[in-house]
Image 1: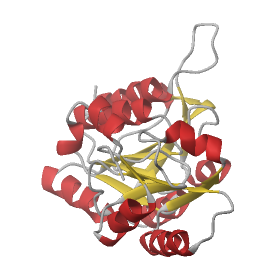
Image 2: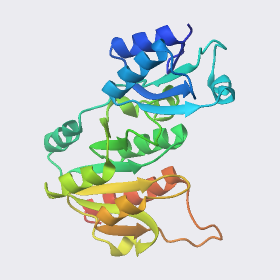
Image 3: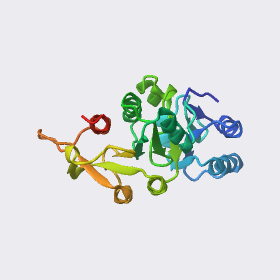
Image 4: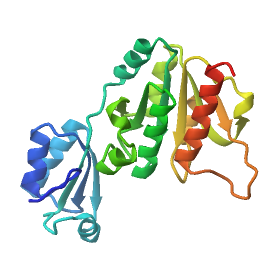
Amino acid sequence: MGYSESQIEGRNAVLEAFRSGKTVDRLYILDGCNDGPVLSIRREAKKSGAFIKYVEKERLDQLSQTGKHQGVIATVAAYEYADPEALWEAAEKSGEPPFFFLLDGIEDPHNLGAIIRTACQAGAHGVVIPKNRAVGLTAAVARTSAGALNYLPVARVTNISQTIEEWKKRGMWFACADMNGTEMYDCDLKGSIGLVIGSEGEGVSRLVKEKCDYRVSIPMKGQLDSLNASVAAGVLAYEIVRQRRGK
């Protein structure tokens, strides 16, 4: 069966992708399909932690690039994910307080790629994304990041809230983008900081927001109520840069 840089179609091809160790972000399976090969694929997906989504045939036909999906399509990471500890190692190597981006449910690949590019240019030491309900490191993300994935570690975790709790024990503070929060100019964003950016439509989820130390807003003068997720990430990131430089 055929495949592209970031998509694999067909039962044998998808099963072989899992068994060869490829990083499968998301697996689409025809709803109600439970024959032997599909059950084998599901077992491999669960072992690797891939997100499984059951869909109708019409959806698979829309996603298919070959027309021969056989009821199974896998989205494969274009880049390898880093271990979360690699972010801390990057911060230690830089000699600076850790500065991480944590992304809560970004689903648009262009937004994710743009945020990764901004994080790299703002001097962040890494990006964290969730395994489920979010886009992974697809080819479109890699293209939009304009090479930033070659320089910045991106880790994928099961639970953003749990990661925040664990990293607080290591002295990190977390600030989430929230249109009802305190203006960014009035927040202390220096030191060891994690910037949390929410999804395009819903923003930061309630559970993640409750774990954050600061809820930070961007001053708005126009008639719209919010900014694009990647633009908001850039504005907040460079306020952190400004404060870290003591300006």
